[in-house]
Length: 348
Image 1 (cartoon, rainbow, N blue to C red):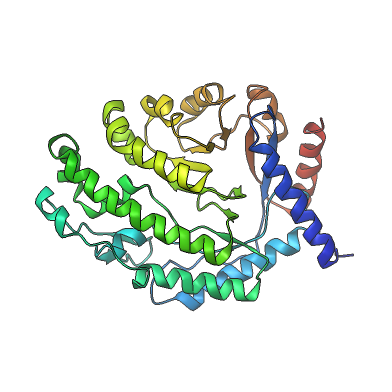
Image 2: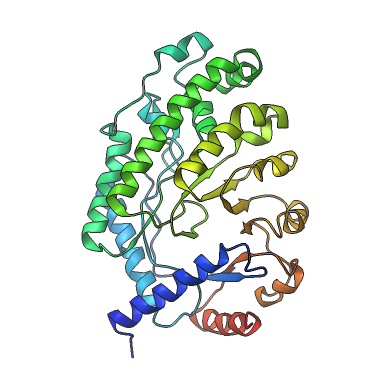
C-alpha cells in the first residue's frame, strides 16, 4: 500500500533533518546515503534555448518518479524539480556567444581578449534570455509542485565565469600582469551572480538541491571552482579567496565542487567561511588523502568512495568523517537490500 501524501511529507521532513544534522560539525561520523536506480527515466534533453518545454516535462517526470520511489526505498534522497543547465549561462548573459554541439553540452565562446576591454563589459539584467529562461522553467515547475525543492542551476565561481568571458590564453597571464582588470571583471560577475541568486531565493525559498552533485542545502550557495587548480596558492589568495569569502558570507552556508587537480589549494579552501560540503572528482589515491585531510572539517562527497560493497565503505573512512555515499544498483530488489544493509551499519 502506497503512503499517503502526509506520510510522504513526513518522510521528506525526516530526510531533510538527517541532512541538516550532517552539516553540524559536532556530529562527527555522521553519514547519509543515496541509492541510484531509475530505469524508467528517459534520456535527458540537452539544455538548449529551443527546447524549454521538453526540459520542463523531463524534469516533471523525474520528480514524479522520485516521489514514487519514496514509497519503497529507504535512503536519504529527496525529490526535486531539476532546472539543469550547462556552464555557459552566466557568460552568455554577459554577451558571450553560446555554441550548441549536436550531441553534447553547450559552452560559451570568449567575449574579450585584452585587459583594455574589461571596462566595456556591462553587467546584464535579470531579463537576459540566458537567465530569464531558467526562471521560466523554475516558475512552471514550482507552479505544478509549490512544495517541492528546486535543483540549482549550474553556478560557476566568479573567477571561473570570468575565465569563460575572457579568452583563457590571455586570461591566465593577466592574473599576473593585469590583476586589477581581472578583479574588475570578476567583481562584475560576482555582483550579477549575487543578484540572480538573491532573486532566485526570493522567489523559491532558500532551501535547494545543489547543481552537482545533488545534495540538499537548507540555505546557502553552492558552486564549482575549477580554475583554482591552474594557479598558485598566492594567486588564489589574492584573486579567488576574497570573492568566495564574500559569497559565502552573504549566503551564510557554502558548498563546492572541484574537479581540478587542486591538491595544493586544499588548505586555502578551508579559509572560506561557512564551508559545509566539498565534492572532489579526482583519482582514488587523491581522494583517499582527502578523506583524512577534511575529516573533521567539512562534509565530503567525492568521486571515489571506497572498495568493495557500499556497506563496507564506512569502515574505510576516518571515524570522525562526515560523508555522503552514492550507491548505484541494477534492480529494485538490489536497491531495497542495499538500503537495509546501509541502515544496519549506520545504526548508532
